[in-house]
Length: 329
Ligand code: TYM
Image 1 (tube, rainbow, N blue to C red):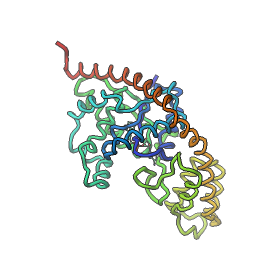
Image 2: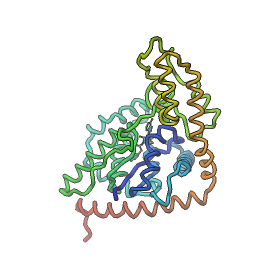
Image 3: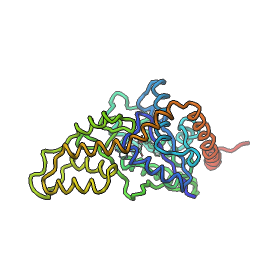
Image 4: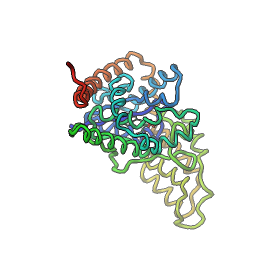
């Protein structure tokens, strides 16, 4: 059975980008693959959360994972920092990760621009930690959104390099994965770019209906089509993209046709979109609150995940140490 690994940083609540880019695939994959889904709390340290925020965020994302339908009986669900083997593998991989290639990574350049006062070494070696997360379980598939494509490329490179240096096909070369084939990018409501936690343009699974309506009604659009069949602007196309994942296909077709014949009213489009998002998120939101409050259940899930993930990771570390040449006397 093929192995799957994926993670999400606990730097805020899950938004529709996380759900449709990643979690939706987790839900399908947990039935047929050997799955490891984790909360990337080591990664979140690059932004320096306070200890209280860190713990609260991990708990919140765990509750959201479970409320969205991840099943701890089917998948191994764990907290990254419960697996110190990942930190050891990162250190070992770092010896063959080069400054030039790390500096050229788009995500590093973006972060260095966004937080110029905090360009820490963790940001630079972020793709190495991510590679360790993935290959420590010998993953073949990694369900992620399009924004993680380059990080995955780095993982593939580091895995292949390790195999070459130690002259063994030890790590599989993992593939980014989406059931719909192409990796997807869910846009934000601000007219351009992706939906993200730090972009302030997100629709969250936890958002109350009133909040969703308000955000969607304020979404950026254009001044409207002026001639039939004109090209759809980026901002309106973004709303169509969100509609394509939360609404019925005929709803999307209806508004696209209205755009094409210039009869579209953006107020109507937004009202429909907001209601469809509410219908989609409402059942998950109710579950998040109940699960978040159930400390005993959360503790049970975390302990179970830790044990299963540890079994897999410690075997890899033992073998890697042997391959590298750390041998007992
Ligand atoms: P993170 O926490 O930013 O996002 C978690 C997952 O959500 C996807 N995603 C999106 N997909 C489509 N459209 C969007 N607008 C959108 N925003 C986020 C991301 O692609 C990701 O799949 N580095 C990772 C976490 C990580 C990881 C790993 C992932 C650490 N180790 C190992 C996979 C395997 C990150 O920051 O994702």
